Figure 1 (cartoon, rainbow, N blue to C red):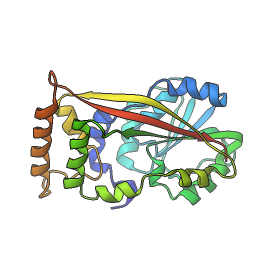
Figure 2 (figure 1 turned 90 degrees about the horizontal axis):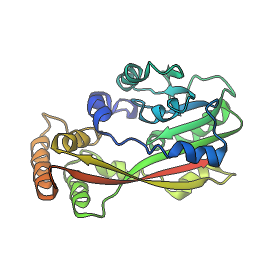
Figure 3 (figure 1 turned 90 degrees about the vertical axis):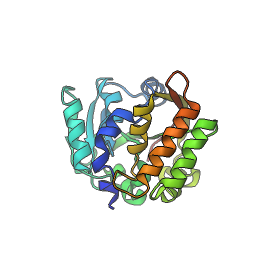
Length: 250
């Protein structure tokens, strides 16, 4: 399946059950980069608009660049009331934006899908002089027993979860992308509290989990039910995330 089509059947679960980004990101970027509400922002791989909304609420004009039709249309449905929201059918490698047109580029849990050399060239083309790029991820933690059990479930039943593990972006990849400049790393603590329907929706929002009709779907759901019953407290389980930001110039 093409990377740009992986989430087409998972949009509703993605919107409802994926973690959002901490509101503290915007004040941090104001301090770190001088971000203002007047900055023109391109959100590359904007999906359903989870990362876009952070900056729309700051008063920014945001070009939400997303190749997946279903995700882009959901963002349009959810964010159309923000005057600064502009939906763009494009990719990281071909945004369709004009040369030297944006002050800031963000990519929320999307950079690992990009052709990084081509995306870097495109980012340099559309960025104004002195512009910044922030790459950010909500990194799910797996140290605690429930989280570790969930990770094992993905390894057992995920259709191509191991391939996704190989897509993790390491320090050398980031250094190469921002070179010859350095990037600044910063992290925030983040969390999700979920009842069972939310936990199931969170699982099914991932592009590497089997969907209904797949031979592994029923045993995966049974395993999830058992995991939830073992670790729920007052009907709720908790995921811890580390929200990681990498910010720099190109």
